[in-house]
Length: 319
Ligand SMILES: Nc1ncnc2c1ncn2[C@@H]1O[C@H](COP(=O)(O)OP(=O)(O)OP(=O)(O)O)[C@@H](O)[C@H]1O
Picture 1 (tube, rainbow, N blue to C red):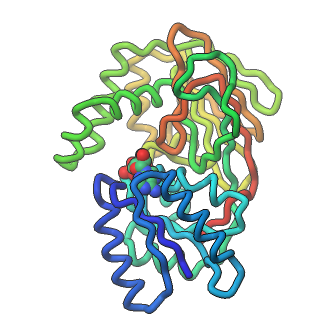
Picture 2 (picture 1 turned 90 degrees about the vertical axis):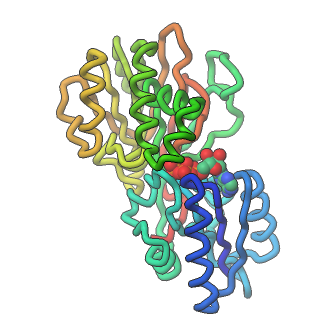
């Protein structure tokens, strides 16, 4: 039996439409399935746990895999239950950004993505394990009890502040309604530039220290893109056991603005105020008046200081 974990709200309601198409195809083909239409990640995780206990993978009528209909946030919510479980995860992209699906070269077309999930062998991919300040605290030290698994990337500093401003804004809903979701992010970039100040960033990669006096942002990546196709670490791979890091520093606000379009092609890596690093273990600390926010898989995680560790091969993916 296959489990479909469906987030109908993903992609501003696209999840519902995608699931309708997929379910019709699954029924037509007589594939045994269970659909979990959930309202939050906790509900999805606890339902999947229950089903895995009832129908262990590998047994007769066992769960063959969990196929997610949703975006990066929906996938992110299921990582704690599926990492290390031996149960493979398939993806039918239905979110706004879909950076995981993009990194794996999956089709945006629901039936093609379904076919790929059903017919592919399970392959191990790396996860990034994040430990850092929780959202509810401003305490300076890492205090999250459990490392949190991330599939795509951590956004730290300016880009996380933009995501935060957009999520809190009244214009996000309006832009989504008018189907110009990316306009909300352009407004968010300008809004954040008015108040955001670069900070001293200290990164340690596999024990080697790197200091940046005027750090705008840093991204720690397991896959190459975030934010719906911004190729922040174009060489990152989720199968190399390594994390790729991009730091943007020592530039003017205007240079920062001009960098954003170059993220689409990944050509920003040639700019003198962009530094790339790579390693198995990364710590990031910041020294500035404001909290340096962290987003992971497009979801708010908290603030620095943080530790990111590569966890090779911890998730089985169908792609
Ligand atoms: N299993 C779930 N069921 C319902 N809601 C969920 C579930 N998992 C996460 N969510 C919530 O739904 C929100 C939107 O989901 P998701 O992030 O997948 O879509 P998106 O933001 O449109 O796409 P993307 O992350 O690819 O840009 C998440 O931010 C999260 O709060």
